Length: 141
Image (cartoon, rainbow, N blue to C red; front, side, top):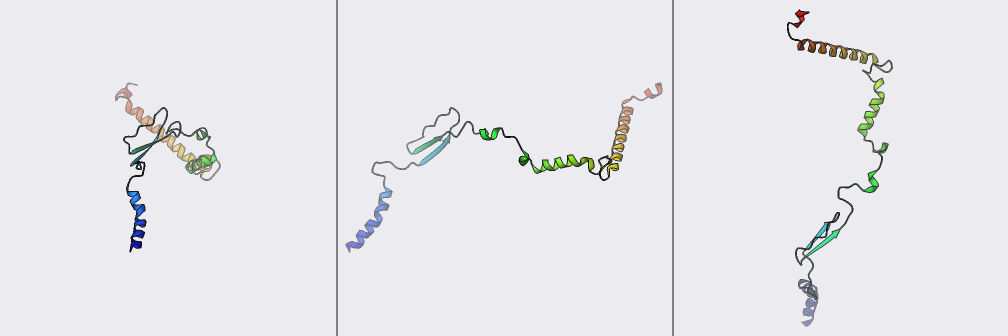
């Protein structure tokens, strides 16, 4: 009869020890606050006895690029695919359709388009010039 009682008491003893405070009277903190400090900032004081404040200094500034990455020159591996496609287009523009070039496919169509655009711009300039002139000034000449 005593034996089952002793077994139950031994099984419950760790639970009873955890429920109360430790022998020195200190309980684990209820709140832990982690703070990153930059420049000349000082570590803030805890708000109460049940709070622990942990301070750390990670570097110069939270918004600075690390020194190892500041002066890197972009190489071909850092060029975006969009820019690579634009470079290919720029290089091949002389041989593309509509280029007004003696080489490449449809070069002559580009020359015709350029000539028509120039004629249209001249006609628009002439029309704007006539619209800017006051009526009746044409008769004075």
